[in-house]
Image (cartoon, rainbow, N blue to C red; front, side, top):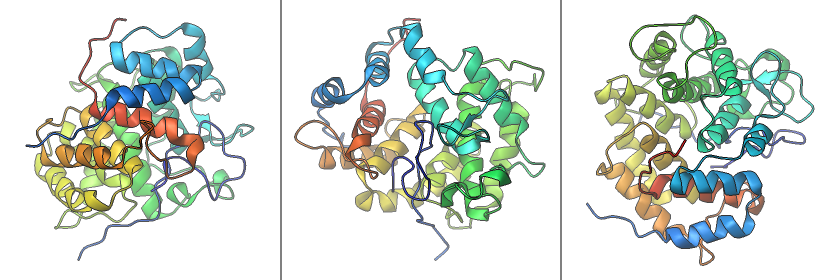
Length: 312
């Protein structure tokens, strides 16, 4: 499982999304001991200014300097999304979800840039509740975001649905979208959850890439569709022993973000996997090369840290 876009895309931009490898799932309490101090030291030693700011906020809830937030927001298209490449003109669902993850770590989901992006995501939803990339991206899109591909569509639906779930209760829409209980994007997320549930097999498997499982489980959990979410989580629990550290961190951080209980066996197992795979320098390996190890390590910290109260 790759942790960020690599192959299949020329000159990937910093906005590119986490990249699920082609690992379809088809039919057929002991706390982990993670050295968080060492992980923090790794990010301090190897991260850039924005990554260190993300770390600071994850640790203490401290406000992030505005110039660093604006740096993370740069490159947004006029319509609201972010393009997949540095010089791109067409906004990408995949890349926009990745940028929202960065802004979430910076405490910036309530700012105008994120609100504009969330509104763009909501407006991009198809009538059947799913998402698909713009056909104009077909020549550069990686397989997990390939326009018209059913597996990619399922993954993008789970990913977009997750970020609208996370942000909907906290970030008001910039325009009139939905004022029902459940946040600004209640109707959009409900339709996404139904689309995810409709794609599940009776045994909890799903016809898409591995991360679509934990993203979909998170969406379903927050919609109160606990049986469907639990079926997915049971399948994921079987995969934990073979997961890369990047996958284990992404899974645990995702489920923690929607307040899945700390005692759940899947989260306990994911933290144990992170403890087993932490390097002696405190970091974890990215699946896309060491240039992305700080990103993976930040996600592992989010997965394992104690909750903090935001200072902003």
